[in-house]
Length: 631
Ligand SMILES: NC(=O)C1=CN([C@@H]2O[C@H](COP(=O)(O)OP(=O)(O)OC[C@H]3O[C@@H](n4cnc5c(N)ncnc54)[C@H](O)[C@@H]3O)[C@@H](O)[C@H]2O)C=CC1
Ligand SMILES: O=C(O)C(=O)COP(=O)(O)O
Image (cartoon, rainbow, N blue to C red; front, side):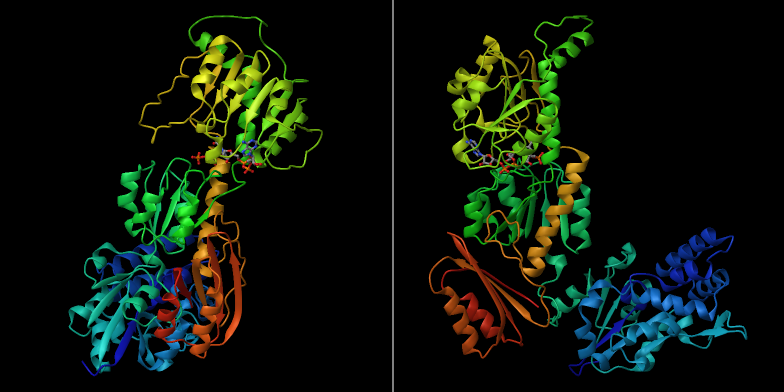
């Protein structure tokens, strides 16, 4: 078989296309048929049994054709539908088909009638397609197939390949048992089980290599021209129970996704992160500089929440790791909880409910108030604070706010020039600052002292912002008439750990397990938002909305290669990049640069093939942190 040339034997159904063509044909030909549903199911079952090698092929074909009741004109619709369902990685790698057209063979137990029109668009030669042919009656009804064709028989692919007598190496790519048989017969060097569309357990075990996409096949055979790196090699680790939609999206993109329901501590994460390219976390997992030291393959971190104080953003920058979050996806959920808690605290609702559960009836108006006309002081007038301001005003509260930055007052909200001013005028004080380290214990004895007597206090921001001992003392003394705390300096890693806090059992104190953003809507919104940002970054280099990288929104890549260079922000790096390109006679079609205090981010689109030396030279530029190429 050896003469150095490579031949590629590719299966059609569920490999070249995402579907089994006869299943799709059934949906078309049985349109309006009274037994449609039943027959389609039967056809699918027969297909599956056959693909697993458990049913004689001819029998499977006969049975399916009888159920199909199909006509020549149905084939036109079938071809149209199949064109849209070519496997994604095949679409991405059209170049491979063009380059190797002489040596690509489609060998299928399906039918040339629909295979040829599909594969010809991918430069596959009609004479290189080996498959069955339908037979029609005078009215055009499909009544059978060419029974002399070996491909209508078991082991037909083997026989066909023998006849072809190919010179050189033979690689078989397919998802079914009949593809594997070629290898068993000694006619192929390697059988690659293709799992982009279906996975058949019994075939996976037998394959020389499992290839989740054509990208992987091309990559391991050093033939990739269309994509830089197979997506199945991008390991994603999603912690803290992120919404299934995120998992689904990232799997759909082709990533290798591992999921863990709880947070991980530093040691565990140091171990786990070694092979991870994308890490997804929520508010609990601490991504420290030490964790990042072990993270040699890390490209991006997704915070599936708003706060990013749990991530060492600067250490990420220095490592060239882009961080993304969901800045608005759970804003409304936090606001609604705050409103509910303000009303509940003003009416001592939780304590009253607890008494009722203990059989105590305590009907009284003592210490209960309407919220109408009371003053609400919002500390931190960002997205959450500002939205709370609007909703609270509509309920009749008088809103005051204080922020360290200049902020536009919404509605009739009144700006306070100092925290002291806000504390002295507010009946209710609520914290919505971010978790920056400087905010540690920003609220303690001194601030409680300034507050009005019998005021209400809420913290839905971060646990470390409030001095818990001071809060406890002020609730016990009665200075604070009620408190709602959603976030704590120490929170359990998972739902299986006990919650330990000095605040337990205090009167009129609502304790909630960090659920400000825990609504179905918020989690779904986050899961739709964050993966897209990460995928966009990986696919195009775009950093829009990144919390640590300079933000660059890039045009889509067309007929060019994109070089992505992340370096320490030093003068002269761009000039050095361009010198390397000029030295190699490479023409730049577009270039984008943005820097921040720590890094420079340069995207260069080039219009011609490059040799490995350029890549090496670009990587070797002093102060380079990370470099990658998109094709
Ligand atoms: N309980 C929960 O489940 C959730 C908690 N959060 C927390 O809420 C925080 C705020 O969220 P957003 O409003 O979306 O963030 P944001 O960044 O839009 O707003 C934070 C605001 O606080 C201000 N600020 C920071 N330190 C301050 C200080 N010491 N005094 C006064 N103002 C200060 C900032 O200037 C900014 O305007 C998040 O950072 C997160 O920690 C967010 C979502 C859910
Ligand atoms: O969005 C945030 O910052 C939150 O605090 C919510 O965190 P979570 O996703 O519930 O761990």
